[in-house]
Picture 1 (cartoon, each protein chain N blue to C red):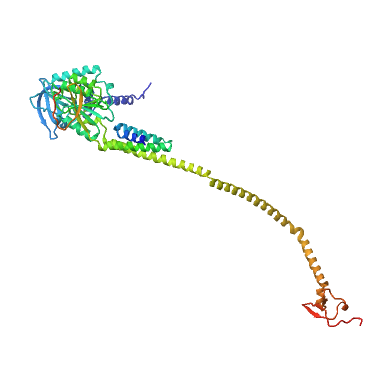
Picture 2 (cartoon, rainbow over the protein chains, first blue to last red):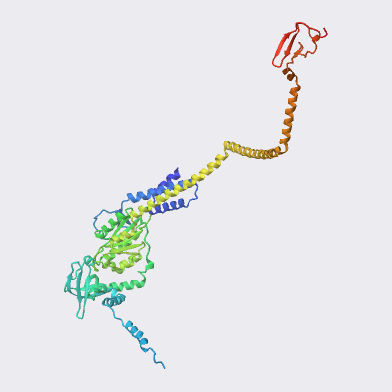
Length: 91
Length: 450
């Protein structure tokens, strides 16, 4: 149970490209066949999680828009940027 | 002696050959030849021409026609409508200009023309020279080498954008990214993009992006866009500065440069991993299209379901086989199997017996068939003899005598009476007639001698 939950959480946090490529691998493994029944079912369940992850990202994502600012120590940080924010002369 | 040697016919083909090798071309063919020669000349494909603008006219279609002239010559120039509308600068009579474009033939009028792509005020000539000189130098260094070009990541998570916060370029990029790939994180590194002081700010902004990493993941940007909207060559000049071009070439991330309009070319673009015609195109190039990816996910999903149901149906048939094997081992099944086995044995036995019976019957029948021939007559004879014997027997038998009127009398002990003295008066006797019997009493006994 814990293992399944952990996998669920891992997939739910995957970036799109990782989720997509793992999804593809699962599909290809299933298509290759010759798997024990339990493995087929486990792969299917995993595949559905990848599918959900990808679809969720595609449908719900909202562009994150930030700008870089340089602090006195030279450290570069990203801060959220609202539309129309004025230009700042570089330090 | 060759009086009939046909001299004339031999000469005729020669004349025909001469006519064939003497080319008479159509006007269009000549024009095509000149056009081919012009187009084959590399110097004429991209020329910068400085001169004074003569007559200017704008056609109904919106194309601009003018002449560029100096003391010795003039050239007809054309700016097509779309290019003209994009140009920050208009040709006006009396101006000294530098026009850039290619030389080609306008077939219909039989004239050669400069097809203008960019137009700059004179004095720009210095810039153009610097441009060409720097281009040659950096090219020689291999900065624009195609082998240096890096591939863009297919699915960038973080995109660095180096541009002005106020320009249209940033707005365009944001719009495209929000539409195509909203799961991206965009990090803008602001710089100036206009005029001479811009170059160092561009270099600084590029370096800032290169130094940034995400606090949590430690990841840098996956790809960087350097962009600016359209402008004159002077406006765009910072993107031709050596420091900027080198910063682009040296950037640790794959970098897309989209500066100006379609026709503008800057050296920073040559140094980029990918050159985009405009800032919007740059944004399009760095991310996949959401709709494509949606279709891809749907495709995988349907393959997932297909493969799974196939796997299950395979399993089901395997399972059915196993179930069958299992059922075969069940005690009841074993009994049934045993019964079946016995049944089979019985069947076999019955068949064997039946076959044997059949053989026997066949043999009997065959024997029976042979019988009449041997015995029929003998049986017939026997039967006739028997009939005759029984007839004589009945003729000889006591009952036949009774038929003739005789009777048989039996005494009380059942013995046939032959002598009257064997009974006394009062004895009961039975009398057997031809039909029926009589029970009678003896009244008196008379001796035959008396």
